[in-house]
Length: 504
Image (cartoon, rainbow, N blue to C red; front, side, top):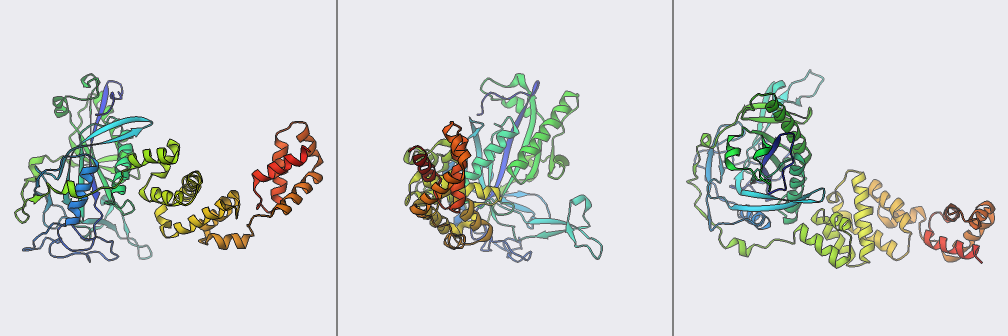
């Protein structure tokens, strides 16, 4: 449960989430169709995922393994047996008119996840996490004039709607939390942490479009009904009308949608008007939520057992399926093993690929040097370009070579960062080619010594300022030497040589 509820006047927001995570498997959950993206719609389909009469589903073992990994990571109970149900509702992208999902015997129950908001630790209870199939996708289309390309638009402005069943049957894990959130900022932090854990488990690809979608329930309750530990009695929650905001596609979007909805409901309650229990849509362009329909109740879905799938025995899977070191544990190990600061350890464990790359580099070179180059230089330059490390996954050996050039004093750290690394990312060249083309090999000691002498002789005013105790003078002289050596001398060495000669 979160800490003491944050109050908004005399009202408190109560938020619960349903997070739909696409699992990273080669094939769909109940058939052998590929889950890879396709250029053409309706090409990764078969009688099973199209719901044709007589087609029988078969459970994908990889999806079950992924679900067990998630259950272990959130410390959930995994039962001896789990079953599938049919959830009945009509929608154009659901070709069977029902969804195969789990109901009263989910594969994971009673878990939790800890996360931080501005340094404060929060614990959210995960009520259940269950397997199900993803529906297809729909595209609302508006026809333009002859010289304007047909384009996707909102449903209100569409001339017609297209349905693509390539996504239908992609394995989903729906993760349902208790209503433990009291502020949209907590929701964003939780989603970031959840995605981090899923990426470490290797069951989720955050770069895939639509791979994580959020439905969020929000209601407002009287602050007087909130207990000291932040909990709210079940009777209060049952009486509070809530809205569900559907199909939010990002962490930032969830925070914005819930901030708007929190403000909207607060104004309604304070003006004496009722909050309608309904399903709403988040309009990312305008940053608001709009009404879609009245909210369905559980009975509306007419759940019943999926007769074509027998109960699945999973009791032994929890013991036999391993999970990797998770981000919190790896973060703590980095601090202890490599002596890193909390900030550096956090950066270096932001994704599993970053953490793995750092350990590869730290295994060959000084860990402090490795941390500087991976956490500060590389990630800093990638963030500036709005790039992820996955976009240069096939070039990490080149980055390692760059660290080697700096570690062996073949080039200066300054040139390595400002010229070589930036050139690698902007122009796609390898480090050795950039070093050769730019003439960045370190200047030999005699050349540096000559440049130091010349800088002192040519700048008598700066020398006089140095003797007068002006701190900036030595920096100016270092700059003059660096200019003479084309930036290939080590600034620290130059500083030392200048002081030695000036103080003789």
